[in-house]
Image (cartoon, rainbow, N blue to C red; front, side):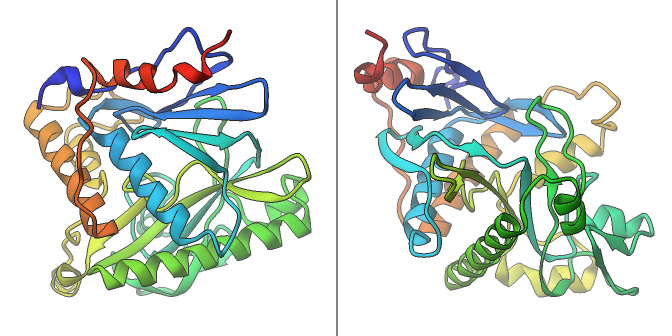
Length: 318
């Protein structure tokens, strides 16, 4: 995989009002639309670890599949797809709470319920988990574990429903709407995933409000970046032996890093080229398994950025 097919940066000077996120580059147009470009950057532990060929296209097209699959559950921000890495969305006021839905006692980050559970915590996110649960065990029912939305690139902090309401982060009505949407989206995601031989373990959603105050699903949905998927046939044996089930997410990159350092405190070693290529293959396999469609990489243009610039010319500032 040639390095020039990697989109590590998506700076396009002809587009206005750039905001650079961990993975996506955003440009706000004067008419209320937002251009969202998915780069190939891989983010974990609140830092950029490396860039993965075709990751941005996989994320955009996987999210497209899910936005279309869940449009009957809640409104989403999508207006158009001018390029395989790009979505034109309705600009929203993003709500200051990230909604994480979990179906299993799993995870590797400091905010994951498995990390907290291993540390002896049982009460978390306003929920009490029973004693005696094992790593990766299915929860009695899906739970919402919200976190604060760190807009400045800082670290997300755990919240409970009580925290959200008492701090005025959301109104009662907004919380009811957002939590209802999130659980319905997760149920649909788990159902579709099961049909493809997958387990949707957990996921995160971002919501915003449009000019009328309506709550709209933003960002991405059920992608390998925002979600943890396990291969269903690997689960039973892995659970019995205490191993991590085979997954489609970036957990194995996280695991490679955490075996070598504390990524929240130490410098992270460079991700080796073979792990980058393996990760790219995993993202492509994830897309094909999740959607049931073949992945067709768009190789037009001298580079990915050249192709995107060409496709976005109609949006350039006059």
